[in-house]
Length: 177
Length: 177
Image (cartoon, rainbow over all chains, first blue to last red; front, side, top):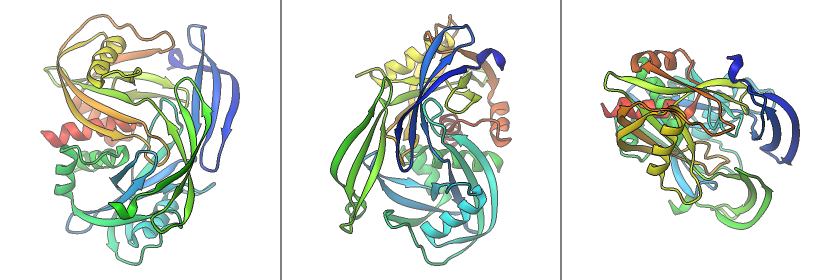
């Protein structure tokens, strides 16, 4: 892998915000030339593919200001500083949907936008679901919905699931069966 | 959907760079309260799930400075200003791998990180592949590899595919079969 690696030369913090920072790094390429890379620093996140005993998937409909659209997504949320991904998954599932899971199993971890961001997203499969009361964060307005897995897969094929993590989670679930 | 929508109040450009910009927007939530949203502006991109007649998938191994890892990814690239996604897909496939496709079919479009970025990624299914010579961009060092689809799916289940767009593309291909 050494022949693809880029050596960092300089790093400049160009934006610092409540959720993301942005760096502008100069790197040396394997052939000795130099280039600049913009990097969005993100704390990382979890997503939860929560499936009921009768194969319904717990989703949230959420308006995403960055995209200008209401999206169908699996429940998800940012890691708090130093938070364990599994603990974060339990917390976000309960906050966003009210459900609690008897079993929470890691499915996959992936980068959402490796070209410009370091966000690593950990996906868990949640089963043995028990319903409670949702308590979303103050500035988070979302609508939990149960959809049959088969319907969600048809929506994905029809282009109605426009969220990368939800499609990636469906992929892993499908491939493991 | 109206009840989830957020009304933009102010917008401040806090970083302007060669590939991304960052805005800090104030929004009014449906219940009248206000909040801030950081938005990474990205030109959008394409990715190509290119599959040979004997079900091998064309991948690139690429070091991603933002992640610090060499990733397995489907070929992909940013849209040039005003560029048609299909034209971009043909261009990126040829540049990164040397292959040309007789058929290029839209599979799905999705947001890679809807919580903080507007990057919309268009995935195409490329078939009828003909080999030529790769001409990657000057600062892009990558290694094209052909892998049997079945092996790639096993790698995904084993957690070795750590790129959201590649997993999402595999999902759509699997679901359509």
